[in-house]
Amino acid sequence: MQADSTGRRRRSSSFEHDGAVRETAADASLCKLSASQLGYYVDPFVQFFVPTPSRRMPIINRGYYARVAAVESLVRKFLRAGESSRQETKKQVVILGAGLDTMFFRLQSSNVLRNCEYFELDFPDVTMQKVSTIKRRKPLQKLLGLSTAEGFMAALSSGYTELNVPGYHLLPCDLRDLDGTTTKLEVAGINRNVPTLFVSECVLIYMEAKYSTQLVAWAASYFDDVSFVLYEQILPDDAFGRVMMANIKARGCDLLSIHDFPTVEAQIARFIDHGYEVAQCWDMNKIYYHFLDPAERAMRERLEIFDELEEFHLLQAHYCVVVATKLASSPAARAIAFSDSDA
Image 1 (cartoon, rainbow, N blue to C red):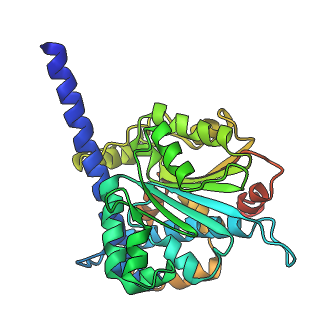
Image 2: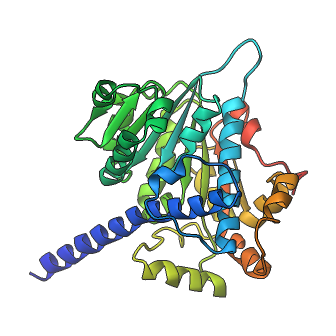
């Protein structure tokens, strides 16, 4: 009976944690809309996913600008990698735990996904929410090439949780179930021979290390040419980190693997030790001051009165971006590498 009770408690705790993690998708969209409405970056699509807008504090708006600008810049660099005026290379982008993210629609409206298959993976109830929003919003359907109700219904499967059209695949899955995730990707047409970029924004950190590590290692073994862009928290054990951890724990979504990869060095090792020839990790202060475009950054810094600079630097020191590539000689490796001359 004792073992039975312990098992039920663990399942209940895991279920509650999963639910809290799913709720972060809505919170991220709220923050992104707040930053977008104030002019930190242009996103005409995020409004469709936020029923009740709410302005966030300047430190949050600036932090989300840095996050969105950094990740999207790296994705765009990957998409341009190895391209010439004579030939365009087929590519794939896989967004892990995509939530309600709108990067696909921004990139599609910029016409940079002509030769790319774009995959978004998340829990079924999150993908169902995204499908529901797309169904109600013509601008989103148009960017997916869906002009009729019949066409939209034909693209749906898995009980309104999955959407597949040429160039875009919204797939319901649990990333901890590697076999199930692989099957979903294969049925949707993933190609192991095409240069592929995985993107994880505060996703792997919510998984136990054994699950995130098997996913990272699987990608290196499955694809001929694969890269990773990862954004997540670090440094849980200093004073600020302990406060950050307590705040996140209070929301019910513990960072289950932050103590496994707590530093820049540990983040690099998680990729180098599992099949990636090159990996770099910069904290978000370094990204903010040495990777983001200085002129654009200066413009954003004039958008709001900002008297939280010291706290902003502390917060940014506890987030990082990792870029890793299986093949050091690949065009993708050169494209997404951080330049030491900028540091």
